[in-house]
Length: 182
View: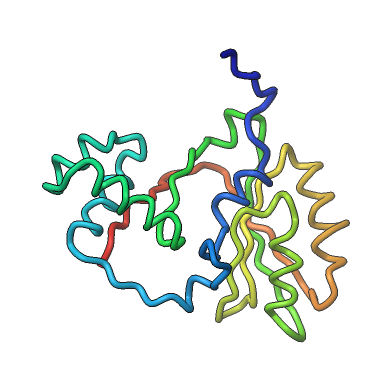
């Protein structure tokens, strides 16, 4: 079976949809689900953070469980939203040459403003925060013109946004997803 080639890889929207899913299969928000992990599940998460392509056989050997038990545990971690296994790409290599963190000041309901920003295709990360800004949003754009259009035509026009400041990334020094479990 031949796979269809990507012109520039998966879209930001499809990557964001995978990475921002915060609901369990039953539609319950993750923060509403109590988290209780035993040592074997914690070890599985840590191993998969290092190499998401590890085989169930290799994982089973590392945690001293059967392959079937590991498969069930991994599936349960995914189904509850505690873990995701995704392909992380380098945006530069797939045609997105401009990344930035956007500091946003807003009035009114921050959750509503955050939801509008999160819905933008170019946004891959949004947090409500304390400090000089009310929200921080990471964006991935094709070029500077695309970033300008996003800032001027989209983000500045969202109801409640009062000011924005863009912090353009010049060079990525570190990006990791291996913080483990507690």
